[in-house]
Length: 340
Image (tube, rainbow, N blue to C red; front, side, top):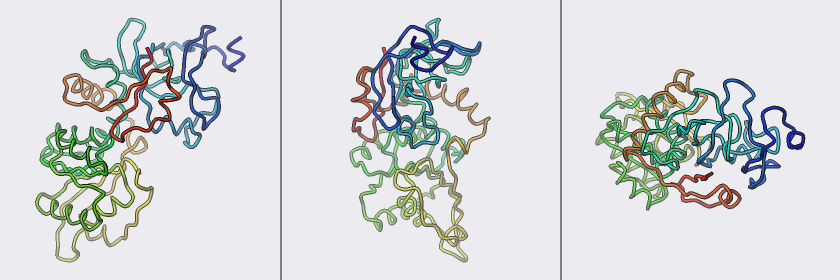
């Protein structure tokens, strides 16, 4: 029996579905048969999947290098996605079981109903970027209308959304940095007023940031890189010592694509009004996360349906999960798997 084969009890039926499975941590998922999930509790629902994005976190969990890596194998990969409830309602949800499958389990009431006009691919691509952009800008930096915002590492998927969201929320000036020069130019169409290439020399980057900071003081930095780029930013924003006053600036780190550590001396912070913050699930309160699902995410979905926000996506079917998993993507593109 399939239940005995996969070592599961009452949460799976005898009927099979197609799913993206890993049989060993570190291996590429394969397109295979797996038992359909069956609700084991009254608060569990079946979701018929439409689409799910593939993110760095999904890959890290499957690699075995993440603290939340899978402990029981085989396992269906994927943490969140879009699908239909039994009555046909289209929703976004996080799964109790893997989401890169024809069916999954979700918790009753813990989903966001999608607005009319929002396609399932965009709906699947947006949430992770919203967490990295909206929570950093609104909850950690507490960006105010009229603020000058620097998005460090803005050419990635989340950085692009952060530029668009900062513009929508009333930033008076948006400065974007990144290595992809083609994408930097495209960011100007998304709302960036100034762009700085991180391919420039350290001296050029610091000089440009200092000049911009003197013209219109930067109020907050949303950082997706950490490492050396942040060291350069701090060098440009730090104060000059005794008898000088520096504008207050919040640096909110969301990612560490350029390195996990920085060199920072105590004197730099003592001579500056710089506040260092992090934005991630561990930095957010229960109330913040509740607000994200009940207010922020529904708002972004509505705006995306209206054409205000959009992300670049690469779409492949579930049957090509092996090819999709190992694809080299443009840094500004989100991979989405279409299930039906």
